[in-house]
Amino acid sequence: MDDYTYNENPGSINALIEEKKRLSDELTSLKAEYKVIASRKNELEKMLESIGEGVIAVDLNMRVIFCNKTAVVICGCDSHGATGRPLAENFNLINATSREAAANPIEKTFQTSQIVGLEHNSVIITPAGEEKYLSATSAPIFDDSGKLNGAILVFRDISDRKKMEEELLKVSKLESLGVLAGGIAHDFNNLLTGITGNISYAKFIISEDSPAQEALNTAEEIVFKAKDLTSQFRTFSGGGAPVKKTVYVSDTIKPAVDFVLRGSKVKASYEINDELWPAEIDEGQIKQLITNLVINAMQAMPGGGNLLIGANNELIDAQNSLNIPAGKYLKISFKDEGDGIAPENISKIFDPYFSTRQSGSGLGLTASYSIARKHGGIITAESLRRQGATFNVLLPVSLKNETAREPQKFIKNHHGHKILVMDDESIVREVTANLLKHLGYQVHTVKNGSEALSSYKEAAGAGRPFDALILDLIVPGDLGGAEVVKKLKDGGAAPRAIAASGFSNEMVMSKFEKYGFCAMISKPYKIKELDELLQKIIKEN
Image (cartoon, rainbow, N blue to C red; front, side, top):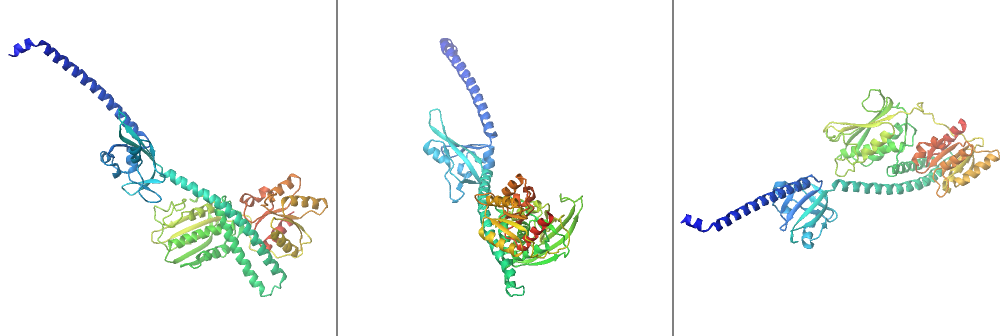
């Protein structure tokens, strides 16, 4: 029967053979195509794995069909566990401000079949509770017939960029605050100069044994405390170059510490060497440094405690480990009774914005470190857990004057020495003129640089030149002190000028000699301080 069928249907056999061959060829072709597709899929996945963005593909049911390594890192999930699971299990978005759930852009892509971006200020919360700012785009996936069958989400962690933007915004705000602070300090110090000048004048014209003398001395002391407050504005005004003069820091430490601790539960005790060497410092900045360290100690002892402040002379040799030049230094130490500093944090405490306290800005110690460095010194910290912390400040000793303090006396007859006073504030001109006249000087006042140049040339032409000039640095709408000195020197004159400012133009005040000045003085100033400067520069020339 089989032989008969076989012999009777040779065409059917041939047809089966041909069909088998066709199917075999088709299978071979499909295998080749599959191999190409698999290879391309593998290449595509490798490319998606290598890019810096997170990539997640989902089907129409919002189930993950692909998730690259970057997405795993950003989302904090398991790539194998994520595949086949609902996207919402590993990709939860909230609005960083409102803390409410934020829309996933894929949902809008499914609604519109369009490319959709992520809402502003969206963050993802990882399974570990970490929050990350994202930049994301969702795009539709269509099949060959143009039918929507999924979406792909491409996203990037922009937390670092967001932090940088926030820091730039802070800097911008600080710059704006600096402009405001500088203007306030300039105007306020001019007013303080008028007050201190009139206090000094009143002390001159009443008898030395008058009960009013004590009240005037107290008023003067209060005004100069207000000057210390305005000097702190330099923190916000940019720059920060120290405007130095020789100071006995022992006179600065206790008033600065007591001022900060007033009303607190922290008690200060002092061990200050009576023979401290003088230092060349910006007194306002060093007071700020002291203030920051005392505040840090107060925060370390919220329940109160003792703060020991010590000050001694210190010799640093050339082989020191502090990276400062060998020589004579003042060592000021602040030892608290707080919990101390963790060993892992001791190297970070002077870093900007580092703080272990929730309410801390992380800038106080950084500012103090910067001030010490700008003075050629350094701050170090040492601590044991539960045994408090000690901060040591080293400041170079002044090389200009190490002699004992010998206050100069007023000389009320200066033999008619001529002084030119330039200031745009009439109250400053008038009170300075009255005080200098009381001391025997001949005084001529002008309100701007143009008038100063004219008066200087006129006096020189008449054979009665000015012995010294007191020049305000900032004169709105006209020449300031530095421009006046430059023009006079360019014209061949040799003016003996004192730079005066209600708010330090730090480049000029800190390097006054470079700009042609013989000395500088910050407003408000004591008439005794101004008189000593005038005596010095007149005597030297």
